[in-house]
Amino acid sequence: MYTIHHGKPEIDALWQELCSKAMANTLSKEESLLYKKWGKAMLLLSNNPRHPGLQSHEIEPLSRRYGLKVWQSYLENNTPGAARMYWVYGPNPQAITIIGLEPHPEDKKKASAIRACALSILH
Image (cartoon, rainbow, N blue to C red; front, side, top):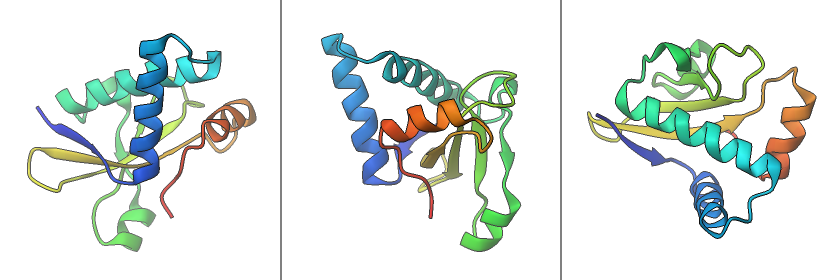
């Protein structure tokens, strides 16, 4: 089992905000969908980064750019337009660090919902 870390303060802040709103039952529809899908994806990732539902694969241009393997997983199972979660192994052997979230480049509806939730992506 892997420990999941959030590699950017903005990602951690967003997750904490979603968790707080979920406990208070004040999530908007878009936030609720993101919370459920992201939470499920992190659970699958912590148990098995190669779970078929995540469709995890290396993003070679980012790996070359940053000098370590950067992986991408889907937040939805078998959904080509699913939002993406970017991650790396580390900082220790049983850890995974999420470094970004991003809507599918061609999905304008999800793009606006995710951006409305103030997600940051890897730059």
